Image 1 (tube, rainbow, N blue to C red):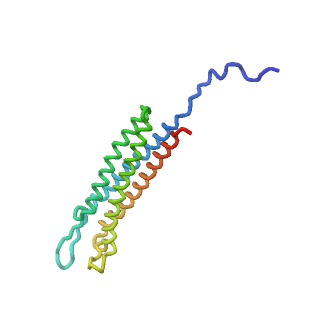
Image 2 (cartoon, rainbow, N blue to C red):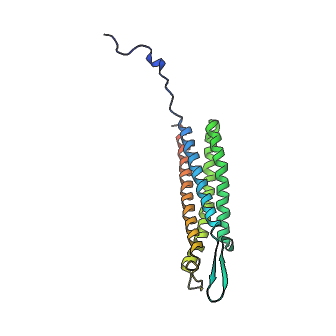
Image 3 (cartoon, rainbow, N blue to C red):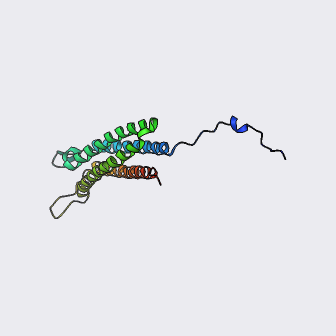
Length: 190
């Protein structure tokens, strides 16, 4: 019985091996880090452009609402700016690992540790800015702090949008931490 396959046809097919798992993880890593940078950049730009001026009728006084009038909002902008800088540095490091995957395990360990620290920074900044934003929205009658969002509506919308985008950035950081830990776990010999 003769074989139906032609001998030697396997040699003429160009078969590319599937990409290594580390390369796949670092490609996802780069994409998530670009998403992290884009989200914190958006959040910072929204806060910085949130200035609003209102004329008080009858008194002729202009009141201004700016992010730099509150230490919590200043901390929020600084923390997100540090996160953006961290995002740029880790994007470049991840791209370099894609081209030279020799020390990818070492990078993943460093990324996991630093991502946790940056997540703590973003979470604390969101907590402080969110607390002040809530007082601005609802006020606090016990200490006679009035609502300001009924007067400075644009400012409050900008702050709320920025807090929502930074919440998304913290979710991206959690995904990056999971990815780093999963990648390190896969490299443990069984």
